[in-house]
Image 1 (cartoon, rainbow, N blue to C red):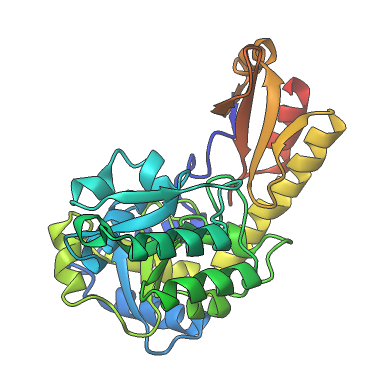
Image 2: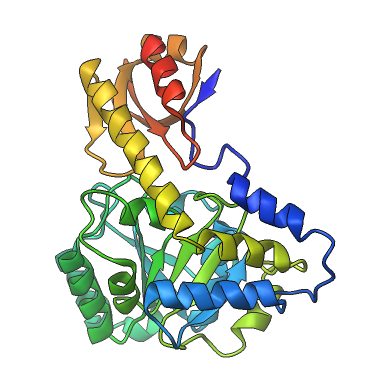
Length: 341
């Protein structure tokens, strides 16, 4: 059986495994204080064009989201997100578990509409009962979104401006950041994205690593004692070298961007294959996640040969499914998919 279920089905890029093996017997200090972590941070700062950035390596996306949000919000504040945002749907209430409410606004194919965000924040802050409510304390978006869509530079500038007007930081969930930046629809560079938020992270788990995310506070604006807060939230790896070596490898010779482009190339070939099969698209995604609508009977048969991710029920007889490519997807897998779709 072939799998297009998600973009972290495989282990890690061979170059990462080679580096981990080659350095396996080196005796290094723990908790991210080794020289590989320092080297990776320097390379990330250079790639982001942010020489003053503070960079931290955390173990996974859910831990990263909940730790950042908990560290940046006051006890009485919540985080504004699209109703489809990962933090409110697929993280088992991890943000609420830290004592912070996810404040949702409508989703448009996964994206926040700037006007609706402005209206929401203005209504919230001018409500006569404001001091009895959960205060909006930050704005959260995903790039790409959970539906594979991306924000344009103009949209991101507008959202960042609205958040800044209300004194709120903008957080960008970059679990699939490489795939968003590599999309032919993207008009943003990594340095431009870094300049339009207060914190973002570079996803490793879904883009070539065994595990790990690199959190970037681009202007050296990390919350006080963020390192300690990371440990308190169970997001720090004692063998920090494992994360440092992986990100040091990803940001050597543009590997991160190279493998991201590969995933997008495979996704565009997948998209064309699905068009040739006259599939109905649930949404027009320009990234590595592709969504199609199939009859339930067809899906049952497909599932005997292809692993996929069920997404949304369309009607009694049809369901939308997700097919995702990754850094590891091979043309042979697309050829095999063609037999069954």
